[in-house]
Image (tube, rainbow, N blue to C red):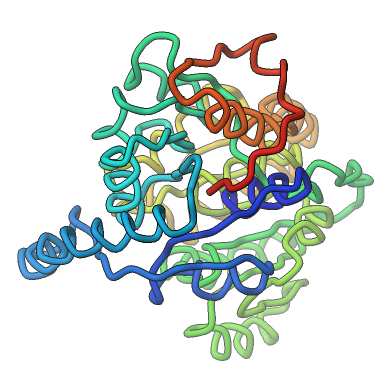
Length: 364
């Protein structure tokens, strides 16, 4: 989603944009739906995988780098924009071998393997959180925030209501931990007579039984397999309970929403917990580890907001203070400057906004 936000900004500026991805990733659906071109490579992960998967990835790497080399040459690429992840490895490697400037977006508090490996060779690193600056050379990074959809920034403040509206989401595929905790909490909320309404995104696998059982729980709300209009769901919610991936954290900040974050425990380098901790330090969220999240914990956390609406408002303000609405625009500016002056480092201030009106023929 951050890459798509930047791609839209580049397209508005008249540039050509091409994605490189795999048939297995979300990009296979999201990129064509957004109207952008995509080229395919075959590559897998290296971290938290078995030795067979790691060996297969090692064997895929040379031909994938060669394919990316040919794609970049054929398209006349002027700059590569990378969000990291295993798909980015061959693309960034090919770009550096060809002398094409690479701009990194590091959305997490701790950079992933690919971004750490290229930290000293990139044109510039754009950071979602200041914690990541320590991994890049001095003067080579800046905190821009993570690009998110404009709709999140445009959400009006939610009007006070007798019921606390709680959005629970484990992402598009759902979360077994959150689904289980939600189910376990029903008797507790019912016994307390709590004025709470739930909207729960369960993922497709557990949607039918969870929705069926919730309908007889005596509680207000609904269960959906997937929420297509997440900005609208945020707008209708007082509190968001969910994972702490970089995109989710950026959306919470853009919307100015208090949250209870439950980091995915198997994220590479435990980056989701680091993201959640950064939000907690800012006063924008509370955190419960995956192993701690059950019905009792969910009930206690939600009830603390039911009983202290002033706390909720303070956390909303703290989350909104972390929002950076110009992240996509800033990324586009840096990409333009990298394409125009690939050997000249750009600072984070006035220089970056000079001479950005010249049209770059092709951007990635």
